[in-house]
Amino acid sequence: MTDKYAVIGHPIKHSKSPFIHAEFARQCQQDIEYTAIEVPLDALASSLQQLRDVLKLKGINITVPFKEQAWELADNLSDRARRAGAINTLIFEQDGTMSGDNTDGIGLCRDLENHDIVLKDKRILLIGAGGAARGVISPLMAYQPAELFIANRTASKANNLAELFSDLGEVQGGGLTDVDGHFDVIINATAASLHGEIPDLPTSIFTNQSCCYDMMYADTDTAFIEWAKKQNVSKTVDGLGMLVEQAAEAFYLWRKVRPDTHSVMQKLRDNM
Ligand code: NDP
Image (tube, rainbow, N blue to C red; front, side):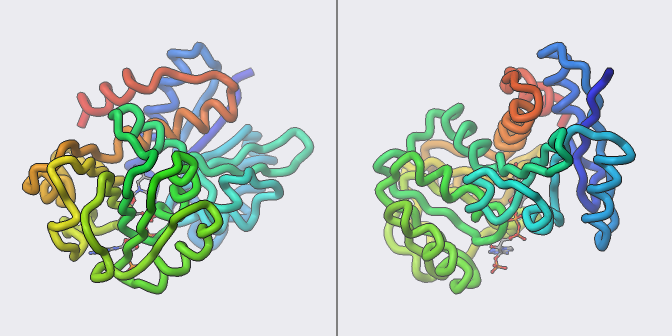
């Protein structure tokens, strides 16, 4: 029997996840169906029950704005999900419980590896302190960077995150004006690019050795990537690869097989 999965969000119709998972399934010869389902903003708990008990789904991906709320509703959480405070993947277990995981961080780290971006002993600047930033901190710290500085427009949010993850190593936080010196790896986890804006940071954060990553992606360079390129940095990468890698990790959690991500990234680029 075909196993059913879905991505839920609000809105959801532009999601690339159904395409990505259909590609994975074809490649790995998995008999699955994966759809996008819009869930009413005030009905996550009842929708999850329905997806499990009526539609008999085996698992779901969760996107904006439900990641934090789903974290609260999950019966079990992986360690990385517990720290992330949000989940993007649920497994409906046979005993009726819901296991939550967060694959965004590992998705980012795999994509950094895809682009030969080294983290160990490097100075990393993580811009933003929303859900996406929080989800990637512990996976980034696993690479033992020299320092991770979290900079956010609202400084208190960055300070809170730095404190929350301070047991993992040299994690500092502050406002955009507290950023000091230059960085080897600069990751934009703000929503600024969505509005064609860039975070209000000095260009002194960049050197010609810096590698810059924008979690957002588009068919043309994002505002952040454009800005970084103007500073003659060594490398710029957008978040399309992160999207595919986090999906691959979710696929692995459900199906226990690892799809090839590179061919799927290429197809997505070709269709953008
Ligand atoms: P949130 O709404 O939780 O957080 C938004 C963050 O952006 C906050 O830190 C906010 O600062 C900051 N921000 C917004 N506008 C500006 C601006 N003009 N200048 C400076 N800072 C700004 O969003 P998420 O954390 O969920 O998502 C952030 C980005 O990451 C989005 O673009 C999203 O598309 C992307 N993303 C990509 C993924 C992928 O797979 N590629 C996965 C997940 C997210 P403040 O706190 O001061 O308001």
